[in-house]
Image 1 (cartoon, one colour):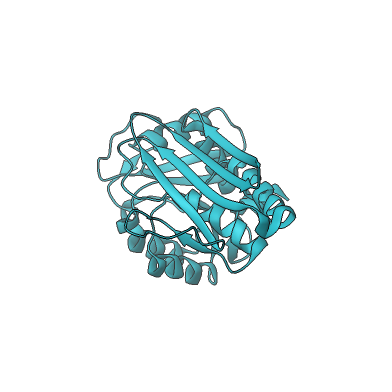
Image 2 (image 1 turned 60 degrees about the vertical axis):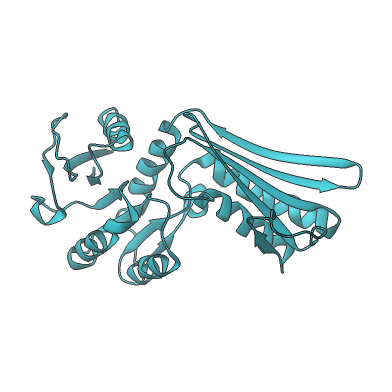
Length: 249
């Protein structure tokens, strides 16, 4: 039985994760942590990780990037595995997460959805097969409350394409540049509106034909299921950085 500490337990994602875990018999939530410590299930909820009673096997984090240091400090001090499911980290924060991965098991990915990670693998294959004859554009759409743009998932998909093609550069804004498209660009475009959970589209545009790979999340549950699976996977693993690719293998 994997013991989970759920950080961000009072938020929407936290409540969805709690509901998913309650229906499984291979894991349990022993504590929740939230700045708004609302108790809504049979586990206690604390304001800080320092207040948590007992030792979890893994922390699932769905909070904000600015709360990273407290979490890393707790996990490193106590030797607890981490599922870092928050997006919008700075490059410096990503390096801190990678450092933690040299000491404890860390599961870190830009998107917890199995479908998105499959899309990433398909994008690699398409980019390698189609080559430089096809321009690549990525469009991501999210709800009007999302604060970071482009999404971490869009950047992950761009990285997958660039890995397969090599030498590509992300381009985020063309309105001030009056020139033809550079063949080495990956155009990334962000749409914010309504209650869109998360749509991602990779467009491969060639001469007289267009190939599109896309994924649409209809609820946040797809991310919650992935996070719980990640927690069970990473608990008890040796120190290291793990991703959805490792879980899928």
